[in-house]
Image 1: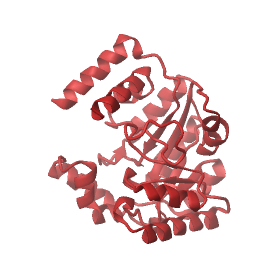
Image 2 (image 1 turned 180 degrees about the vertical axis):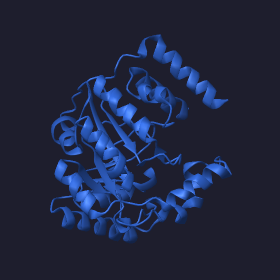
Image 3 (image 1 turned 90 degrees about the vertical axis):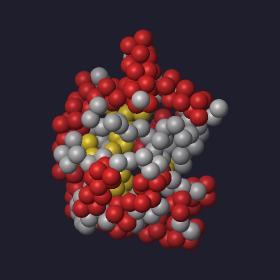
Length: 287
């Protein structure tokens, strides 16, 4: 019932004059692009459709570096710009997303879980109970949980594939070494894990790893200080409702096109209605 009500509200806002494109720059985030049907995945067809929509609407992509250097710091608003990011470094990013991005002349930033490069996403099975409790508030069905668990067998990219994307112009940052759950880990472990991830990315790509993404978008306040002290220039979270601050470089909020297969939801993200809707949700949550 809640989903029906919110869906109806979004459509009313969209049709009622808020469908004009927003001036706010969106930072999109994805995990895997594949046809597995996993809750972590966007289908290949849907991803193609989304990128085609952005191209037809005149959007161009910018890197996080460009965003921080030229736009964010100046606190200006530009139309028709979007940032595309991927968490984890799944091989599907190379196999399926990369060709589509190249087709439309788009760039993206990929946050790597470095211990699992050229391996499988074993952290998913390791953290499945926390994922159920913290991400889905224990409301997820057993079938959906099983689908998420299957993602433990998703392969990640190799360093050779990462270097090929880097040579093209894609940007790479850290998503920790072991996909550590930052909100439930000691400061010492967090420091070691993130430091190790940053070091290997810089060694393999021979350039600074300037950006970080918080796994599960869950972290302690002191984690931001660790990320700053390690030399990162900015860090991304997830839920756009968690922090609407325009001044927090280490709490950049991203928007996932979810439900991934619902194209209206994707279009809604780029409308002025989305800003109004998120603002309403934030106010209601604060009541």
